[in-house]
Image (cartoon, rainbow, N blue to C red):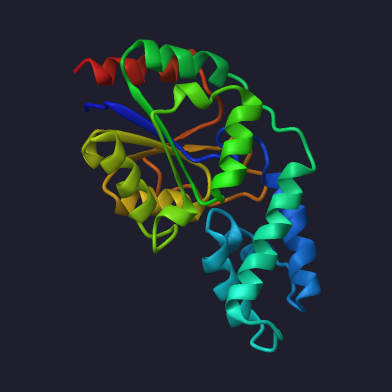
Length: 221
């Protein structure tokens, strides 16, 4: 196995934000007259605002709001959920990021979040300089679970998809990575909803030194 780049999702992978988003989504669904079931919350996780606006309209065709407006309102609810708390880097990444870079492994973020949210998180965490490229949900026509966002990140890195390792947490994100023909590790350390992560090549509960050293060994192959 040869890996030259690691592509991180953001929410639930770099930062433990899923609980905030779940609370926000529960309230938003209720306000839209939709039962906030676990299955629906799972479907919303990992997708961009446009995809989720379309889901909301399919769940409740009676929503009195054009798709473009619902997308805007939904995206704002997600911004409020994140900006309302101070993002904290998940433990272990403070070692992973500088070590991977020192080994010449390229790093990227590919997140369904909007560019302003990604920039806010990376700058607040002080990890912006580690990333060779950032791809947001606004950079592709089709969001997760389609492969476009990871393929775009691969293209920007000039690294073939088969040489990329993706770190994801949500079913939508894992499926997106696998459709892009990339190796995918599922991070389970923030999986409070009990996401089905079985499509991933491996599930990791923490950013351990053992996993880090395996990735480094792959990069040297």
